[in-house]
Length: 354
Image 1 (spheres, helix red, strand yellow):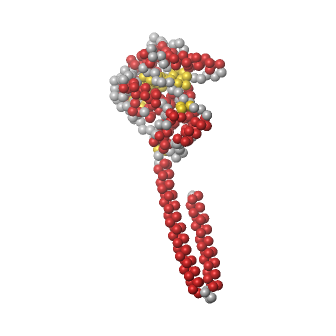
Image 2 (tube, one colour):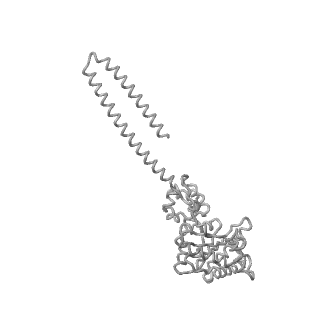
Image 3 (cartoon, rainbow, N blue to C red):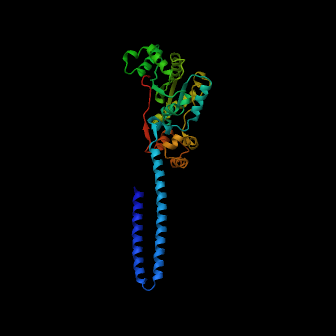
């Protein structure tokens, strides 16, 4: 609208100037016509030629401006028509600097290992978001187009009926609105089998620093063995089991205590002698350095969703005065660059499945 008004004012000013010039010229011509008729005629012809040339130049300029506006309008329309699933828009800011974890999963697949992932890192590294990013942006790792993910509470102690406890918790999670099916493992396993014929399924649990104790590793071992036994489905798509071990920072005096617990857990998870765990432990999730976003910033979807480039990312790190940034802080900053005119596309799931 501003461009149209400016053009209008310019055009009006030009017309007024031309009219004033013509009237002045006519007045001068009338004054000299009696004494110098040849000069008078020549002046009129010159004035007409100049007027025609000026109008031609003006209309050429206007037509170029109109074409430019049309092209810009077309580009704007294309951006407005972009639509993404809400989950893509919510999580793409968390998808950078996770190559180590992805490569570990790729090795698991190459070696035909069970898809059991133990992902560990500080609470400000957004481990749940990382799990979602693996499913959204590295879906080829899971060999599926659609995934369903379910959280299962981790048992705090190893009871005699440990396996039954796990089965019941899975049943409650899958059949929230079907009381009669919650405790019937045959129905539960049949449902899982049917789903795995079409898509990948993920169950995950969370263990935080405040939950860690001397029995944690034993519970983790037992949980892996139990889930491997009851989830041993040989279907087209994998059933993924994921453990998120989140290192809390703690406040004041608890910080020292938590640091000791966290360091001990990291040492245990990275111990190669613990073969029952070591194959499933992904590299620790750490903060993001500037160089880790070189690939992410070149993703076509990133360039469409965010108004961002290499210089702007450089500025983010420069302003933070940090060599590396926790994912939570970085993702929140990146989200501020998301374009406002990106539409939301509905997710389409098979409602007959889980």
